[in-house]
Image (cartoon, rainbow, N blue to C red; front, side, top):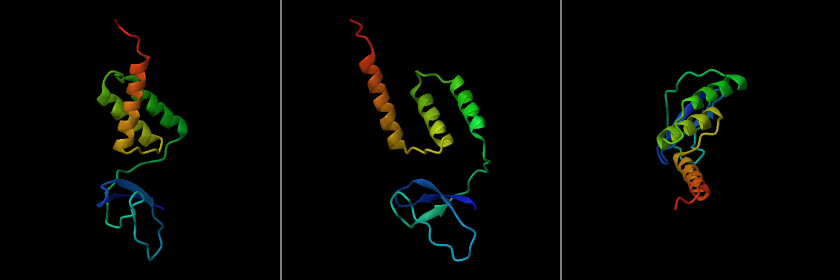
Length: 112
């Protein structure tokens, strides 16, 4: 069964749906807002990878990471969440990164 990507015109989010190959398909609704105004997207071709191959690819991604570059960290977090099948929306990702930054600031020694 194919997995299609859709874009919800109401909440403006992307989502994926496993679609059966039978006649009389049901309408697709957004899992986030329930909206039925969706547009099917053209997706990239993908292949299934084993867990070891996925972990190796993630390790390579982390090798050149500049931990002091917030944009690079955000990009890496998006990639990791996508690879692990945990697509985080931008708000969730931003909140998680802010909480991490606040935790680091609290742990830093006073430089007085």
